[in-house]
Image 1 (cartoon, helix red, strand yellow):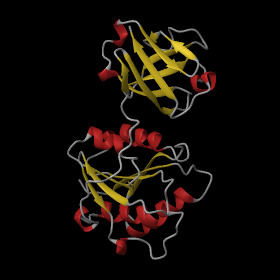
Image 2: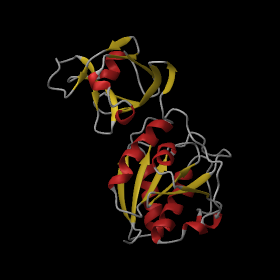
Image 3: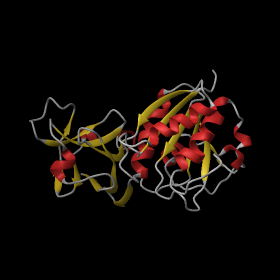
Length: 263
């Protein structure tokens, strides 16, 4: 399949010109590229949220898709631009840990430091590498330029530590909220596969000041406004509220600590 599909995931929003400009740069280099927006509503600077969104989305795209991810609080610093090859997909973005879930899910991944500056735009801004570095590289990669032409393989790339809950006692784990979705659900980093017996054992999720002991099978079986735990479609346990925002109710957001105790 031709490498002509590019996805975009950023924290740029849609009220400014940033995402449109990146698409224009891509089209200048590779007019035939198809561009799909995954999300531009990542909370500003939230690397874990950006990483979660691309990790949930990439598997549903064709092989050889190029995924451009720009959540880049270190733009203009010494952080490196990288190209990741993983699971027959390619990822372009900053070396700041935003691809940590990709690394975990695709153990045979390869990471390259992008040093082929001839692929960049001529005048590189210190604040808009999405336009001047990442978009041109994604276009050239999608157009068929081999990954080896972008730079050498590296092994010291950044990986974030918020991905897996840490065991703090015999039956207690500490984790965090990866993302708050549009409905206000708190998506935690407690994966169903790691706690398969949770539906059959007493437990307590501690989030903010709330202690939750109910695991619902669906929203309809709970009372309106009730806060509970549910297994989400992404495979992670979520803290939700029926027809309400759990995030607003509990006063929690991405990065908030979550503690699980199983009795």
